[in-house]
Length: 430
Ligand SMILES: CC(=O)N[C@H]1[C@@H](OP(=O)(O)OP(=O)(O)OC[C@H]2O[C@@H](n3ccc(=O)[nH]c3=O)[C@H](O)[C@@H]2O)O[C@H](CO)[C@@H](O)[C@@H]1O
Ligand SMILES: C=C(OP(=O)(O)O)C(=O)O
Image (cartoon, rainbow, N blue to C red; front, side, top):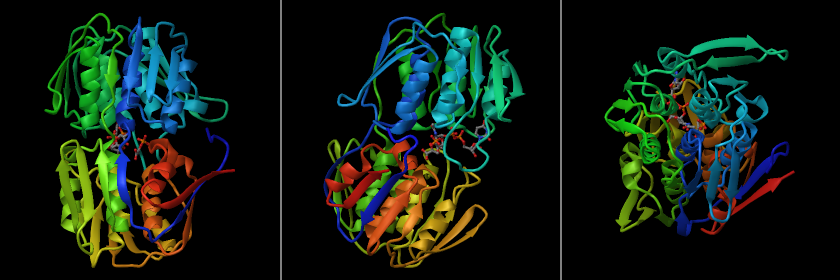
């Protein structure tokens, strides 16, 4: 664990990548599943294909902080959770503020302990990242939400559940964790809940699947209208986490930016949504060979226009990586970030490497092709880190990426997996 120490990645570019890479379990699926497992009042949940990433380490610490027993078996990539002894409704700032997934523990606290005290919520700094859809939904179900100011000036949110009952809830925009939280809150509430404008992401469907296996009565997943019939209790189950489509997308772009060819085990082309089509337009070739997805670049890269959108649109988490890839394209690429209002910090870091990117609000123009050169750059958030690693793979010379903890939040064993493919990359802590 690298908390409190500086994590750096050093990448020497110019090598084509070849070989087989194993796509990790999905960060954005396992985190809500840990939240769901805390709703089981007896028995132990077993989660398989768990990504060994920092966010999972924090989630284990947070589960223990509220009284659950959690064992992460790293070599087995298996997490065992016994939530029968929950004892504290407090999500402490020193853990909860380090990852976004902490907020997915709220429904379990409301149902199991009648309240939740949120000392902080973390996650990438991508602009406003509001939580009003979550709070409004909890209030519509009968909860009360109050905010106090702690001695250090931080806001502490106190949610008292009362007797949660079903109702008609909605997300103004199809929020990923908003949908997951409202479904989990509805699963044990009295009566029927309808959630309108629910997110369609595969991770949301995977979380619905584990909840259904636990005994929840949920229908409409993937339709935008989710109906939940509240039940008395949920039981602990075993579930295998789906592959991480963002991890897969980053390795697809590693093949594209390095000019190599890779075999991805665990990638699902469908889960890449529009991003697969955009990458094909740039000159990436996909060959689904049974359960293995072969990826290579078959020509110089064409420029591209990208608009990020909820699934199956172009995933915002792949926007930073494709910005790095676009630096090599033969002409100007245009990126319109519609999901987050602050996801372009990468542009300044790529400029240090020789990129020419014009940013105007939520729109960026990437002038390519530009030869990238190694530099010292900073990962401002998780996918900024992924993108800088990609840029380093193509750059001339050595790139040093500081604040590497951000990358480790969401990608497992990055240096090991890339080194096995021929990259010259090292992770340093100190
Ligand atoms: C742990 C996890 O699953 N994180 C993912 C989740 O984040 P997260 O669930 O936070 O993303 P959302 O889909 O909720 O947020 C997208 C946009 O909706 C806005 N919004 C969201 C909730 C709300 O109550 N009010 C509101 O205004 C946010 O400010 C943001 O601009 O989905 C994002 C979009 O796919 C991904 O980048 C994150 O990796
Ligand atoms: C924004 C991201 O994660 P989180 O919501 O966990 O901060 C991400 O995965 O790019």
